Image (cartoon, rainbow, N blue to C red):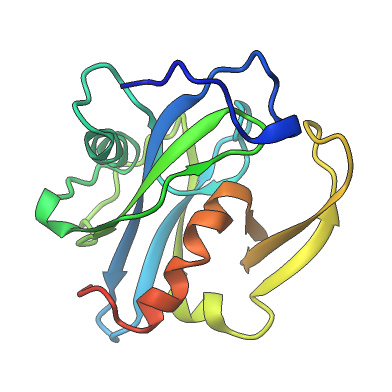
Length: 189
C-alpha cells in the first residue's frame, strides 16, 4: 500500500521526494476521576521527527493489510499496548507533513491503561499523559513565529503547550479538530 506518489504540498516539498505512508493512533482513556486523557510520546532525538511530541505510530509495513493495521502494530511496538479493533473510535482525515514527505492516516482509540507500560526506549524518550482539560485551559493554545531548518522562511505556527514541550505541526493539525469533539462527548471513551 505504500504510495509511489510524489509529495503534493507545493513548494515545501522536494519534487523528487516520494510520499511515505504512515499511520498513528491517538490513545484516549477516562481516568478514575472522570477526566479524559490523551497519551502522547516524546520521540528520542535524531531521525526526521526526533525530539518532537507525537502520537505512537510509524511507517506502513508490507505485512500490514490496512493503515489501521499499521497504527495498531505501531502502538503495540512503541508502547506495548494491544488495542482491540472494537476500541477504535474513529478514522480521522489523512494529513501530510509539510516538509518530510509523510502521508499520515490517524485513528482515535479508547485504551485501558496497562499495569506497566512497555516503552520502546530506542524510539521513545518519554510517555506524555495529557489531561484534555489541560489542552482547553486558557493559555494552552498559542502561536509563534519560527523557522525550521527545512523551511525557506519563518512562518506563524500554532501549538499547544504541554508542560515544557510544544505540540505543533502535523500532530497539532491532527489533534486540534479532535479536541472539541472529545469535549462534546462525541465518542464513548
